Length: 521
Image (cartoon, rainbow, N blue to C red; front, top):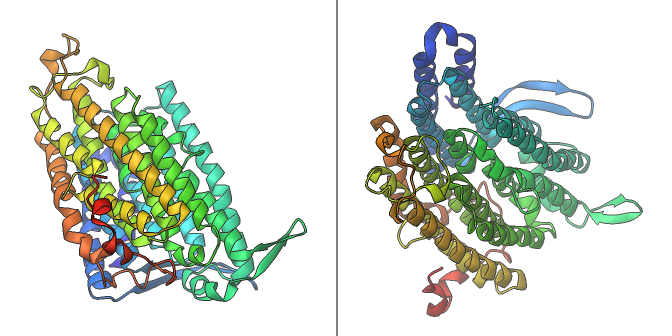
């Protein structure tokens, strides 16, 4: 069953590409959507067994290659961390597949597009379930390759080709760091298996490695290189430039990349390797980069006029929240925000796709306005997604964002106070540009071309169904899962996430002054 979760997306890809001309476009859509949906249903069983019942599963497939000093094997590890990621990735991907069947209707290459989506999902599943760094790196590079094909899907557009190349090159900068990290891990621990490396990590404290006649702490070097790899994938400041340009791909691609797959891979890597970061001296750098990214991206989002680029910069900002939360040793809260963000960000992108679809591919906010009369469903969906993004009380985004900011204050350190300050400023900017997006698109006096008006139409039923599911998740998921993931006394991720006792301060946040706890950010 566990291997079938990973096998079905690849089966969908090969089926649609090898036999697409025989089964037709509709056949490709049915095969790919059914495969991903089946993976999601099987993922729920895996979630029940690993997370609810507490029975982790290690699946060994075969040896990949072996020497006297090194053995690389194909194996997959299913624990609470990976099982929740399976739910998030497969759930969002299945909704994106269903949405794409209608969104790209009429495109002669729709079958190939559905295959690319399945391939992208398959590589992401390999990444999150890998039991060693080699298999993880295989999935890591796979999603980079699949993102190149998806971003440049409309290859006749010059800008789409440029954007896909930019995404590929910028991500390669980060991949260099990850490759060096894996090499350093093998030199240090003589293994690349997660269980072996994580078990030996406490033994490597205070061990040094010589470079250019200087002695460096081994775990600090390894953590720095791992974070270097995460910088590219998760679009942190300095290597963020590819993310807004990735909007040149079809809207379902934007939803899948920004919500549950590519950009969250770096955050997942940091969380998975929490024991290495906890025993290193690099955490303040992680928190610093995350806080600066959250603030910088939110300020840039204030002045964007492209509908999808505004949402793209909000993704970059929310990734900053996740990273600086991990840098403050609150990995479970960072993971909680990752799961919440997947729901409302997918909702925002797919709703934006409905607006663009209804306006004959127009994306400029300045050429919209007054659409609440023509697109009431899209308006309701974007409003729910924007409120969840802002952190409106009792919506999904509120529970994780509020916890991140409270934990930053409860840290009582310089970097914690700095991250809290920039996080509050980013939250204010997020609220401003989210209101600006809704106002200019739906409420403001119309600037829509008269030629568009007769053709404006709301989303068809097949596109509305994923939106409704995501909207329900954006409203209730945070409340329903809060106690399981970050509740006091929760042991859900004890086997997956490591915290040093002196860094663990989630209880301290419950005793903050009421003035701080009631602040609207």
